[in-house]
Image (cartoon, rainbow, N blue to C red; front, side, top):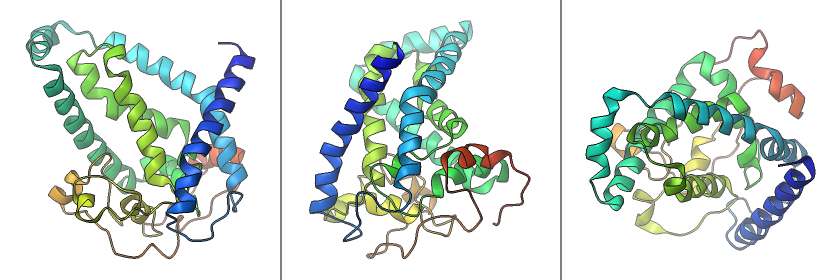
Length: 259
């Protein structure tokens, strides 16, 4: 894809996401009165542009390399047995295994200082909305996307058969960061919701809610956290640059993060 086509695709994606999520944020706001051009929006826009124009291609290329390298003969019998299962069962297994891996992988990002160096870029957003979901260091993205897709690599799923799941997870990640609070009641025990992930972005980096699609793993492992109100503040308790270039360099600076 040439540069013009990439820019056009990014522009269409930006407009489409805005058309989907901004009306939701206006109709069901978690933080009432939050503006489209709130503080930090330009930094998040730079993250969006960097992701769509540059980093996604590199991450996809590296994942494809790994995909090709994981064709180990010892896995052939396992994959043949898995392939005999109904597709719906395989999909359920992939979703549950992916959520289990991303739960523990995500929890480690908040516990291990080296992983937190990269993940803290994402948590530096002091205002959450659909655009803030894109604030993420590319190496953090590679770690997360690799964990989410590892079960599909091992099962030997062809990319075309699980493309819908990859796309859905991407949209879901944007949704749970959006400035939305929908009254879904007890369903939030089963379905992940923005209100859960908002508390994950609390200033306390150990606030919980590490799961992805469903809070099931948080409920099992005792990290479910969903007070009735929104957190008073989002962000991190350490200094970080407020511009895109500074945030790309942030993990490589000599520093001692606060616990």
